[in-house]
Amino acid sequence: MLFAALIASGCASTGGAARPSPFPTAPIPASEMRPVMPAAAESQLIQTALGFRGVPYRLGGDTPDRGFDCSGFVRYVFGLNQVALPRTVSQQSSAGRRVDARNVRPGDLLFFATSTSSASHVGIAIGTGQFVHAPGEKGVVRIDQIDSPYWKDHFLEARRVVPGT
Image (cartoon, rainbow, N blue to C red; front, side, top):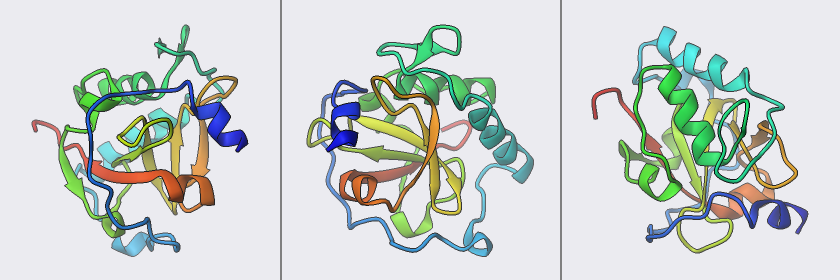
């Protein structure tokens, strides 16, 4: 319930999304993670995202100086890596193409229903069953396990954002 309280005021959006099958319980082996972006670009994207760990959450925040909300964080990280994304969770949940949860790769966007039945939170998959995100009030940009009970129960979909799509 603590996580629900932290997320409730986070990145809310509008619009619906079908709920896919639950996220796999075991991390995807590294040997099965084949990047869409060149490996160097994918690695740089993840390193960029991880470099913001500890930046405070701020509703509407979209820079490290002001703090980040979840979609502001994702947009900022991708923007630094020359990939333009829309600003809100709802808009981002239409970017790129849907990916089966069993095929999530580092750099994919992960969407969760935390405060509504549609996408209301987003993070970036970093591999080994983890993602980085700006979790909500009183939180900071951090890494969490995708298959933890809270995130697994709230997972909606994954999307792969390919440069130029």
